[in-house]
Image 1: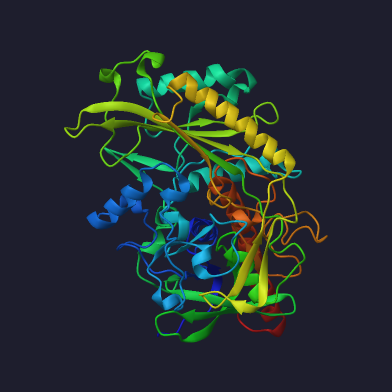
Image 2 (image 1 turned 90 degrees about the vertical axis):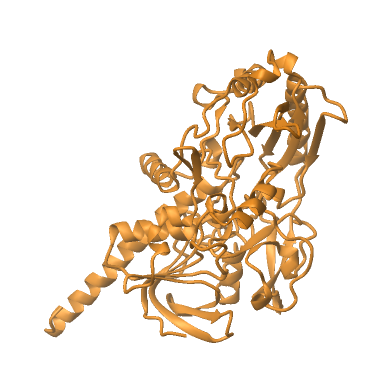
Length: 520
């Protein structure tokens, strides 16, 4: 093992959130030395590359097989087949249900984590609906919120309609509009899903961490280093200052401390609070306020007559794609509380000719925020990584359950407008809690250190001068849709605060040296 120089900024987590923090700090302060610690090993040859874009044919085929059902829990391909009992060195890079790592996940069985470099950022669907209404947490600075949203969209490379709209897709949008359009504001009508996808000739490239922070693809240098297969065990802190992080090199088992002027934890909404707990940083709100929208999925084979189409109107998929497009029904508050995510696709016969046309009809249903929905961390038991074991408490309120039943009715009405709702052509299922992987709130931000939040609006942990958090865990609101774009806003805010903190530290050192009469 080589010696790791102290960092100006040490980031725990090399996924989208960590990459966003790194890129923003690098842009504002190019002289800063940044180190990213990532527990997982690489999948493929390029760090942080989305699996959609890998050139390895075996990896590509595996990804397409997992993605093609169009259901998030199946999409990510989380391994549910076994428990990991032999430590992190035995884990093949990929996604695993939390139950595989041990702990009590009965109340939140769908939860999964990325045990690979880049985390969920190399697997995600790339859907980027923007936060609206009660999802936002702008405080008293709505203009600043808009700027941060635009920055997050730029970092993710969000495109308003990367697939383009086909004739069948337009028919689907018309059916959705006819069903709920009157309840939608002008800017919140059914529309193509904005996605973190960049059209590149015939290809549609997904945004992974490497596209946000390209420096991670290059060799280590004085300015930056990416440490893969390196597990953060604990934050080293004294008083209000975190001086570094104790890490373990997974292949060798060797532990060491990496020192840093500032530390950002951007793991995920499960492992960020887990690391804080392991470090003895345990504010009252830690792990509490766990929130996730309910996830109702369905699939309908279209009746082409209902859509005014024939098989000759049904296009083929783009090369390397398994859907024709992804469409969005934005939520509109109490009048229309659901987020709809609809992917249409063509089914082919054995000769490659169009056989049928269908759509996945996903409905995300907002759930009430409750402090009792939480993760508890064990004082005495550890999981397969050696960190405190998790136990989940999660349940739907009566209001949540009523919303879910209403969503079932809307979903069925939409299915009936597209096809025939029978056992052969229609299926619908409420997925288990945790299945969307869009969880939030476990280190939530707040405006006061009153026990209901873990950090301030900039992600700085209450009571600490140089410890910052970024990602879905920081989001304090109940999200109705995909969480990535909203979570990236927290990374933008944290990066700005970190940059200011590093500059303040430099200025303080300069003044001290000047008072001592030493050259700066």
